[in-house]
Amino acid sequence: MTLSLAPMTTDWATEVARWRYPPPLDIYNPTDDTAGAMLDGNHLAILEDGELVGFIGLGAESRVPGGPVARDDVTDVGVGIRPDRLSERFGTRAGELVLETLHMAGHTALRASVLASNERSMSLAVRLGFRETGAFLSSRDGARFVVLERELLS
Ligand SMILES: CC(C)(COP(=O)(O)OP(=O)(O)OC[C@H]1O[C@@H](n2cnc3c(N)ncnc32)[C@H](O)[C@@H]1OP(=O)(O)O)[C@@H](O)C(=O)NCCC(=O)NCCS
Image (cartoon, rainbow, N blue to C red; front, side, top):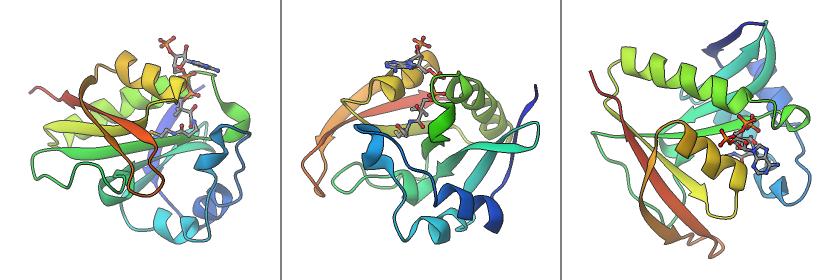
């Protein structure tokens, strides 16, 4: 089975907007703005043999209110895997592909803001070589987030 990345399309964005996660992951459920946000030019589809299994978000959409502001030398990243395909290592495999792809595209460092209680996401970031650089409380709902960063060495 081949995993690949592709620019987000309207059809895939519409699919993502229909995803529903079970509690406690339901905080990641799409909102009315999701389909449009997916088409901002900063989202990639994660495909397994051409089928949508997740997405990657870069830049503003991956930052959290109350968290670190944009910086020129670091790219904010976020990821979502299809709710019926969680814990099948798609996050890990796609993450490795994203590291390689962004490195080749000239990005020098990545940053992720991860909900502290999200064990899968914390494990994924650590597995991919990110290390904790800070923490903050979301100004949206007071939830605690951990900031993790990873350099992409040339
Ligand atoms: C977070 C997410 C991207 C991880 O992708 P995934 O394909 O489900 O995760 P993987 O199967 O690759 O596993 C990643 C790590 O989580 C661990 N994990 C898997 N299922 C888990 C569970 N139910 N509870 C705790 N840890 C779990 C794995 O063991 C692995 O850690 P390891 O490499 O140290 O063994 C995915 O679960 C997701 O989209 N969740 C909902 C949205 C979300 O949380 N987005 C992240 C926002 S920052």
